[in-house]
Image (cartoon, rainbow, N blue to C red; front, side):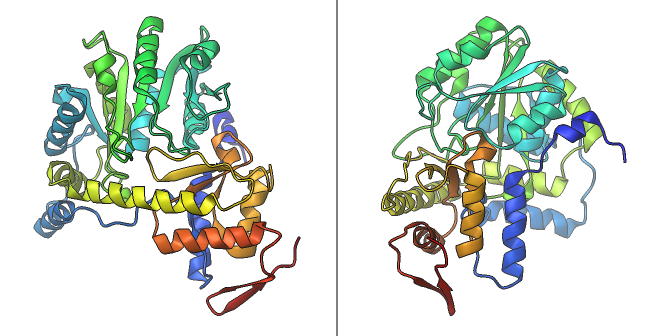
Length: 405
């Protein structure tokens, strides 16, 4: 069988594969604890559910414009004005089948084969593969100081004549680190000076802790005309716990949105009208669910951090936002894939190997589940890894016996 050169370079999504593995184990009745997922467990806003049910009851579920229905675009325009102090037109907005599609379409609209796209590491697992799908070259950048906070010098050092775009995700998946306002200002200035596209992946920008406030990247833009190369990506999946609704969006210059709309029109056409109506209702609703989720996540983070600090040798960077923690488990095993498989096999706890995010020796642990899952999952991990643990552990009625050292 002959497949394309690009297809041969694309690997499976590690996070989606782990979701599948956890589902299979649970279906078998195994007491698996999934600490690797990126899906809040709270319910979607009631406004979203009512809007979707109302349209479904009408029976008028039809095709939509490739760039999104007017009601959703107006909701995104209001959102953009509220959080970015930027008044945009409907022609500046594209609604997509999730923030992932909005980002993918943006990359397809701006990248040529062999051009480079830079992003800080550790990075979301899909960034390199999405860039490769365009025939372009992903350029991950690990901060030289060993932290999870990139410096503008680290980014500048890898810019070449082939560089076309930079992706910034803050707070970041997998680390939960929120980049400083000064860094955001510097990266906006750098991209304008070098005539580069800047893609701000703001999907977690409201899920932040310790009194922090979302950073408005647009305030640092000097060229506020339609020539601006700033692209803002967002969606309802994370902040509204509407992962299965698959609605995201991009805000950019009119010309770029026009091109992205053409691409999306041939790829998938417009997103489902049912799900767009629900997303619009969530954006226009009370917003109480966002604050409730944010508060729950902050509490979950504190519990997880406290539990992990009881481990000998584990280094923890406290997340500023998101619902992920990226801990250094190199003290136990520098091969994160082997370690994650060991934890799944021995105590049925799902984590994500750090190597998938560009930094081995680490595990990404999600805290968007229940407190019970967090505490029991970490307890199982500690029992499996700590050589001083008791010889036996009970999971429900099942007895586990340590047969390793």
